[in-house]
Length: 483
Image 1: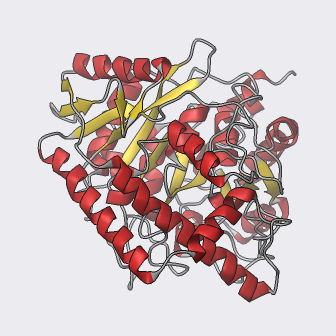
Image 2 (image 1 turned 45 degrees about the vertical axis):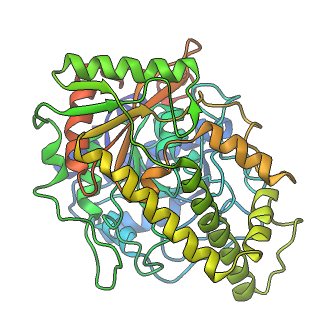
């Protein structure tokens, strides 16, 4: 059978992979459909910065593994990790890489699942912004309204998945970069437990354990199945997540039991929620109560200011180290002419830090982790809106500015809650359960205990069944193409 664009886009990754594996449609036919979607939609969205037609055709010719995602088109974030011998821009004029001769472990595992890499997705420079507006490759546009941000740093991936170009795409999260963009574009996005997905061989931990790799998707089951495909350590990993009792896909549809859920209805982390975000949390709380859970207004008692102090040390040190190592490896000269203003500001901050400052930041992170984690001895989940404000228009978080301090003040106002889960290593998921009066998606976030993605997947699937979101489709998408 040949798939039309709308038939293709109506399928999630597992459904599309099942068609390929059964022989009802070929991987080549699916690839051509995905490339047609890229050709017709990417000029408006700028979600994809590099198309991998030749690489995908070569992979099909060599024979795709018989995994659950056989022949399913997939985007790699244009940062790291990436496929072998494929150039990476890093969303930058400075952080470019002509291609490495090897593939990280998670990329190998995606290949073994059968995924077909068809392109690289747009990202802010070095992933260091909550909006994907890099100077080097241009802004990604939100398919719900092209004047708005896709979030960051996985902004190209979420735009492509929301628009139906691919059913799933790579995303990474060092302070909300899976969950914020997924919320901005109406998708499912989970930041897994620290150590659930290995960073080998490129790193043990990144940004003091804050960074996690995974995907964004339209369905809960794709997020669960792809975590099954990649989860597990390799020798030498410094953090190893607790082993799951069974496949995460088996948790989708499993009864979660009666859970005790705390909800922040008005604000958290020293921020007041804007009305439409508060309404999203209240709606989700009512829905969970209707599903039989015990829901009450309650939030963890943790020092959000102390968390910010520690995180900014790791953020500055991580970006500064990346700049200096890339300059050393390539002979390039870092300067304001080739590096965006926010990253230059972070580099300057890093130069003022000492080893003692870094150890103090680790102590602050440990203090906040213990404060925050105590909440989950009495509650199974914490519910908040994913962001404190609705998705901003493009330009609000444009990162090539000289006033780095003001840029980060704006960023933390939009995203005050997500990064505590990066600090503690706990899992958290965003779900597209609400929208503004103007039709822009607003996500709600559920966070759980360390190692307990299972409960998040059970509850997320329960909410997906109770308030389905797949029929909500953005104006700029495969479903609305003429002809």
